Image (tube, rainbow, N blue to C red; front, side, top):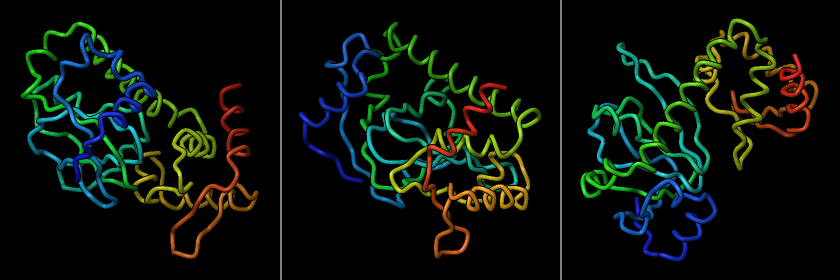
Length: 226
């Protein structure tokens, strides 16, 4: 972790993602721009939440830890995402942990130093409600789709909506848990996408990358038409 002392760069990120529009007075908030290196853990499961984060570059993987300490893939975040909001609202320990997949930068807002301003900012509170509702709706759709939509289409939709600079697929065991399917079933669908030159099997065992998003999009569009 390294703090970046570059106000111009932070301002560029804020304008690009319109972050300041989520607050009544963004300029009065204490905040900093921080860079995290690949492989770092930004926050660990069950640690005390003390920051809000806006991801403005790079990719972060969020995972959940079950009661038996088994790790479950949650989602990969790529740019323009807020995290830490659930723990802030509920004042509970962190329910996920976040690992940096590729070098990333975040605008970090310390909660303690800004708590009174955040708690009384109607604009920010409305934004929080929208973020939580949107994430809930996405999760609801995900679980409903398991019963009604073929895995092939769900896999295509996930890969298309979670594009990353390296075009790589996440850990397959975690992806299978996320899509709520067996590892073997997932491999069959990945093999199919490789056969139609949509995915490519890399030299490392179990590693794949997307080589044609336009073909994936056809499966996503077909899904939306049904």
